[in-house]
Image (cartoon, rainbow, N blue to C red):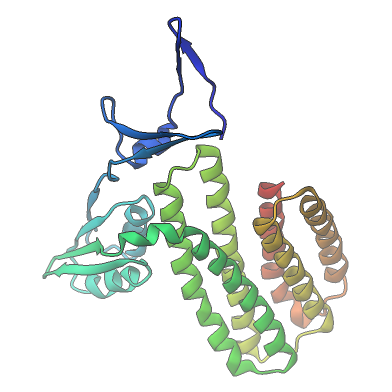
Length: 296
């Protein structure tokens, strides 16, 4: 990021600190920072620890969607989530939602209370590897689905579909890291969009697996071609995320244009029996297009 140097008085130059960085590390006016002046750069290091945050939520009686109550505080960066509930069958639902939270464990449980606590704070250094892992899961699901469909291994589609749970966990963890790490707001917004779209791709692939597996559907070659096209473009996105040069930008932009043309051409040849597969295929295409827009 770039910051403007401000002149104060006759001989003093000042530089402002990024707001999100200060908030994340709980830095306030009057705090001391370590400053290391090097030949071509100035290294500023905080001694402050990020603020320990606790959330207390109450799930109303008769509620069915327990997961959203848990996921919100987790992705916003809270370290302790105290959950009060009233329904007798609420606890199993809460535990199911808690299983998606990487780094959190149940530290207290009673008749109407469950406390989830972050016990793995060192994981905040793993953002890049977790983001790469989410990308790999999406690619693996797509390629494995193509292979299973071609070989008519319908039972295998069940295990591929289950990979969506891992994608959900990685998605939530990455969103938590984006919201707690010192990103500029525009960068955080862009990353959150990319992460959510990658996770949505795994949702759509899971839907394809379910449709084919349930109906023992004979998938037409044009559908397999469309899946391969999506997989090829997803790999272009991965390359772009790891190597942001002009050639990669141009390759991704051309790939995005070609993807739209290919999916449109393929859709005109789909047999009636395969029409249910077009909705998730179009959704994957839109996710890939939106990711390309964020990267360009």
